[in-house]
Length: 95
Image (cartoon, rainbow, N blue to C red):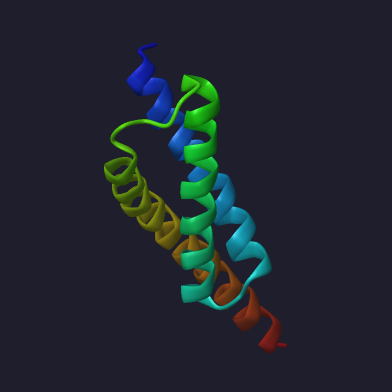
């Protein structure tokens, strides 16, 4: 597996885990998306620094790109969790 593929896999894994945790504990959708995005970007940049041993010269571009990817993933996870919460709430209302 190439180094680029490992980076994408790491970003995706971190984004999914962060999205799940944020949307599970925070019920306000926009707050959870923003929190998940920030957490994902910071964690990914720390992981990239630890892996490379130095700050990437394209750090600002990496932050913007990973922010976009993290926000999309967090939004999709949030929509799924939100839909599940609504289904559970509707199921409880009916006798």
